[in-house]
Length: 291
Image: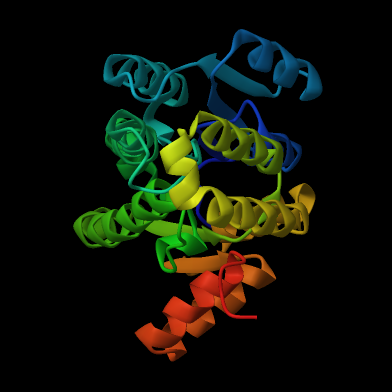
């Protein structure tokens, strides 16, 4: 059993546990003996996971951008756990808003930050008393794009970069309380995300005006093709969840770690290459570089 726990049955709370990586994590951690709590967006997801886990996973419908709803959920979970506190918080919920920054509605960019950044902040702060009680661990599901931003992926890259900074700050501020903070820098994963990404990409392309299509249509089509290919060939759902569980249980806790060979390679290049070399690489990676 993990060394991070303080009771016989370790506990974990996972945002975005109704689908994708969060769902896989919830099921695997329940199988490992964790007491699993989580958020979902729809009641159908709650029912589905309750059945799939034979009642071992307790989900609640919570919009993490609703601070009062987050506080109520955290209070309920913390109350059930009592003095033992919460051993692990996995901040996983997130959305993707692809497109050229020039044409994306500002409201859409703000929405991405509301979910990916401010929602995560709200959840972390709500659970800090329970995490202090257990001297637990926070795992933020970030992305390699937090260190290697990609064109047409601006809001997501920027929000993941913000999470990297917040993680470093939390790690310092929470050190006196024995709380570890880990960033899982995910690469491309086949965990339900590719279908959502493809739908989001199509929506952006279909919404372009004639003028916007003349400016960005061809380049965005190349980006769409490259991204769909990368995600389709990404780390499997099972392997992605297993890697995150390694980071949940690894001792001592790493500050950050890659999830997937592609993330490992990209993050190595970020450390080694010049800005000019990285600019060329980011264009090539999304199908816009020199042949």
